[in-house]
Amino acid sequence: MTSPDPAPDASAAHDLLDQDGVRLTVRDAIATVTLDNPAKRNAQSPALWRALAEAGRALPGSVRVVVLRGEGKSFSAGLDRQAFTPEGFDGEPSFLDLARGSDAELDAVIAEYQEAFTWWRRNDVVSIAAVQGHAIGAGFQLALACDLRVAAQDVQFAMRETSLGLVPDLTGTHPLVGAVGYARALEICATGRFVHADEAERIGLANIVVPADELDGAVQDLAAALLAAPRDAVVETKALLRGAGDRTYEEQRAAERAAQARRLRDLAGLAD
Image: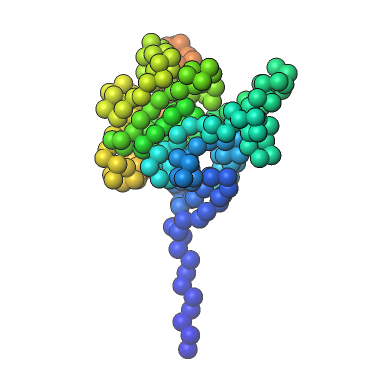
């Protein structure tokens, strides 16, 4: 008599995307997005940005926490310098070609690139960047795109765009100013210097700093803590906090009252 097949493991991880150096894996309420090109220190390209945007679209509605990590010794060393060569990337216009386009065309292309960096701020998920080694330029901006950052002791943040005659344009300037203030953000960007782990924690770039071999465990513990509270309470709280900087004090008071009314009605079974 043959034994029945074992029941599928409901908590097993499932790969939903694996393309262009990006892998999306989902286990229960936690999704993990992995930059998976360690040989190039997870250098970024337009193809990788499209894959990151696709990962955001592919997230199941059951996901509450998204972890972003980089395979290997570096989180991401930034933009692949091949972008600045006349040849560019295979099948892609080079950045030099893009510069020759109209203002509208160039604006549209950059807006498309930015999509890879925007969805991490959605109110229905909390995103955590697990950052080790280099997080430079586009890598720094990708870490800044997340709500929270857990950093290894060997982390090196740097915004090197100005040294190339460019500006940070992948949505990193807003969260950087929000985290460290205008003056320090300007100094970090204009000098392109490295911000190491201890300073990153002290000035608010990193929520937690741990030894490199404890990074995964620290992220898992943080994710578990985030999942302990009811989902809708976390969603409402994130929306309140994200909008606070754009509201007056009185507007924020009103937003708090409205959010609390929704929560009370939901808990009382009176929600629409």
